[in-house]
Image: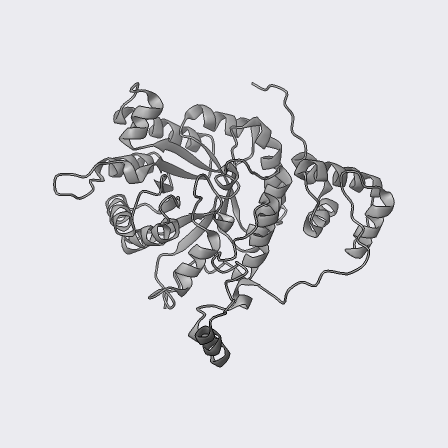
Length: 422
C-alpha cells in the first residue's frame, strides 16, 4: 500500500541542463528530448524561456506537438523571472500555460543582485504582483521559485535554521494563486537533514506542494532531492523533484533523473512505499540518457548510476562468483528495468547517410532503410539539410523519423528570427 501523497518528476534539462557552460542543445534536440521524456511518462518538462525571443518558435511548435499527443500527457512549463513584464512577454508571444516564476530569497543574493535597492518586503511585493499577473493572464498552473532558499537564513543562536521568511514567502505566493513553491538549493549547500527539516516546516505551515531543485556542488543533489521531497510528504503534501538527464546543469550539475528514480524505488525503506508517480515508464531511461549524451556531446561516465557502461560490470573474483550464483548478491536492479537490451550490433560494410550536404539519392536510401515512404522528397531533403546544420552533428534515426512525420512543426522549430520585436 502506497503513501497518500506522491512524488512527481519535473525534468529541467531543457532549461537548467542547457545552461551548462560551453555546451548546449539545438531547438530540434530539445524537442526530441521532450518527446522522449513524454514517452517516459515524466509529469512535466521545464522546456524553456518564454521571455526570450529565440525560444518563441520552438516553444509554440512544441506546444502544438503536445496538443497532437506527441508528448503523451506531459506538461510543458516555461521559466521566467518573478516579474510582471516577463509574464506579459510570455502570454504575448507564446501559448505557454504552465509557468515557474523565480526570484532570490537569500540575503546574500538579494543584496548582491539588487545592490541594496530592495529589501525583503519588496521581494514579497514582486512575488505577489507576478503571481497575480500570471493568474489574470490565464496561466493554468504557477510555481514560485525561492532561488537560494537553502541560504535564506543564517543560523540562529540555538544553531537551528529559521525559515520564518520562507514561510512568509510561500504564504504570499499561495495567497495570490501559486500552486507550488520551488525550494532551490541553488549552490548545493544543504544537507539531507537540513533540507528535510526546512521543507517539512514550510509545507506544514503553508500546506502547499513543494518542488525540490538541487544542485550538486557538494555531491548531495540526489540525496537532498529525495530527503527534501520526503519532508513534504511527511508534512502531508505532494512533492515534485527537478531532475536533468545525466545530471547536466550549471557547475557540478543537477539531480540526475535516473539516480533520483532509482533512489525513490530501490533504496532502503522505499521499495514498498509506492511513492513515485506511477505513470513513469522506467524502461525508457536508457533511450533518453543515450540521446542526451549524443545531443550534448558528452559521453556517459562509466560509473554513471544505472546507465554507465560499468553499472552492471563485475570484475573482482568475489563479486563475479556472487553474481554467477545470484545477481541479487551484487545488484539492486536489472538492466532490463532501465530498458537496456542486448548491445546494438552495427551493420558492417557501406554506410550511406544524409545531412547538411546530402542529396536526393542518399535521402531515399536512408529513409527506405527506415521503412518510410516520403510524400515530398525535396521538402524533406530541405528540412534534413537545415536540421543537420541546426544540430551541427549527424541526425539520429529518430530525428529523421520526426522530420518526416511532423514537417510543419520542424520548420517552425528550425526558424530563429533575429529581427527585433517589441
